[in-house]
Length: 119
Image (cartoon, rainbow, N blue to C red; front, top):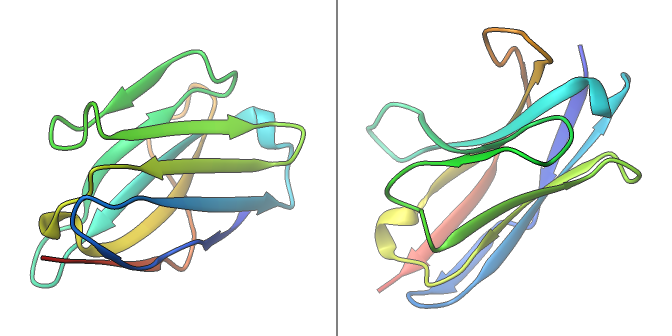
């Protein structure tokens, strides 16, 4: 499995921006689709965004469309999540995940990074 380490979380005011990064190691990064998920206190983990191995196909949860952008740099083995116009309901632990090309499930996960949006 690929190893994943997230960074970039923190505290931001509503309307502000943050950029999360996820550095991958241990396997060929371009062999994986990548995703961001989040889990708020007392809630199930939910999908935020995914990007295909080549960066050409991206999908977003309705709740973040138009505000968040997922991207990747295969030369740097890193996937990013740019979060703009943030809302208090974006508060959660954000997880990076990897899925092998043509795989079904995301089966490699990072440790998570806390994002808190104050009203």
